Length: 64
Image 1: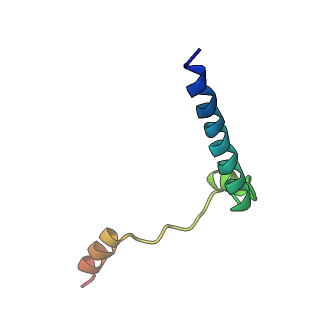
Image 2 (image 1 turned 45 degrees about the vertical axis):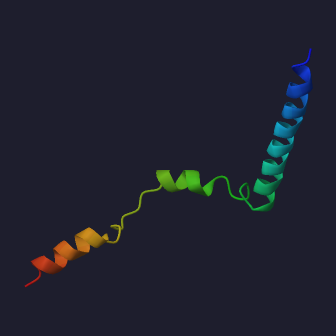
């Protein structure tokens, strides 16, 4: 019975944190666009990605 005096306030605090996190996510725009990131994986891009810093150095060394 004494453990309920600890668990109930702990559960209420956890619920409060979860509600605060949900409200923060909604206000910051986390749920504004749910589809575009999923479709970006499916769409095919024909462009090559820009070279990274390591690739750029090797390309400069190969150029006479």
